[in-house]
Amino acid sequence: MQEWPDMTDDARKFWCMYSGKREVLGHALFNHDPFDQFAWCQEWRFAIADYLTFNEGEYVNGFRPSPMGPDEDSFAYDTLKGERPSVEALRYAEKVLERFREWLRIAGEDY
Image 1 (cartoon, rainbow, N blue to C red):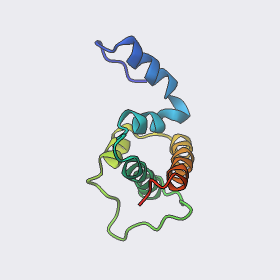
Image 2 (cartoon, rainbow, N blue to C red):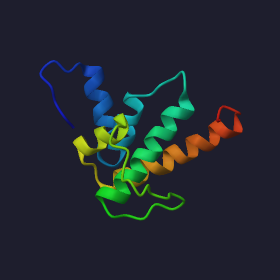
Image 3 (tube, rainbow, N blue to C red):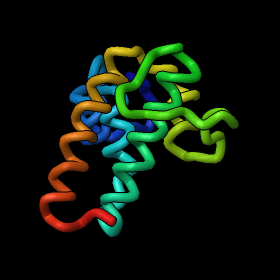
């Protein structure tokens, strides 16, 4: 967990909860867009898949990587590059976001 001198107790609690295997999910939730949840979810899912594929050499089921490489302009991908999370944290967030995307589809909030 990163510490800043002016970190509030609430921020400290948030980052304590979202450390370890929940680290990537914490960054995604911290940057959550409540007005377009589907786009937010997809941005993070693609960033995680790009990071796993291009930075970790991992196979991501159902993901076809771009021949032009990862989306370097993505805020989520840039965040992952800066944090350098573990494969375990990436896989955990991938599973949670996949489930969330399915809930959005069932609710008719996908496009």
